[in-house]
Length: 100
Image (cartoon, rainbow, N blue to C red; front, top):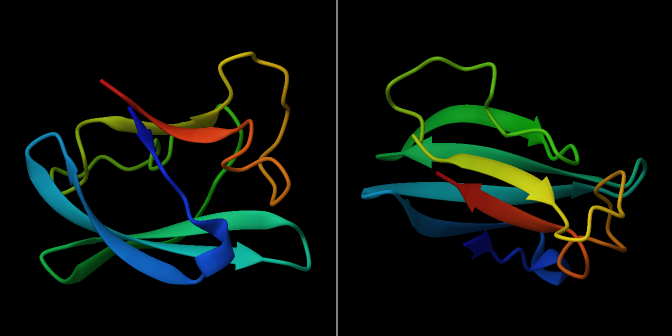
């Protein structure tokens, strides 16, 4: 499963079920350095601000907290040709994949 990112709408926030749990994700873009970040919320509480999307690296991998999603979110492309996440390739060749 992929989480569609509407890069032309940033910054924006949306609700999503990850596993059976509801979360909110806010997407932001840093145009100066061409990268995206995510803020994660649960039950209206901010769990993390500014988690950078790094190609092939699961989001929130350094956090050991029961409030966070059990599923991993990993920015990647299925062909394995990309090396980074930027405005030009997010949603085109690189997608935010949900991994169980």
